[in-house]
Length: 152
Image (cartoon, rainbow, N blue to C red):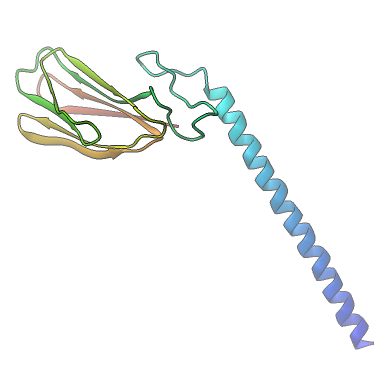
């Protein structure tokens, strides 16, 4: 009698774990479908410059593709100091004049880059921009930095 009770319990446990496992699999499928739907509905979005802010199926989700903006730096026309953009993923540093805007675009799908921005010789920004980020940096007329990040 006790054997039957134990076997019945084990059988119920096996069925229960099968149900739980089946539930997890359908949850994974739901998550995948949700991501796909998110990617599809996000495609019409653009960055401030009008470039597509999302990915295509070719470079995957969630990451920006080749040709998308990596970082944009704007210097106020009223700023009289020196601004230098130092992207580690490029050979040359970029000096910006008052009123000037500089945009770096991704040269490869999912490109990341360590970026330093010097304002009057001092580090105002020093971070790695990830493959799912777009960063806008604005230097105000007083030299203060405003940061805006877009993430997929």
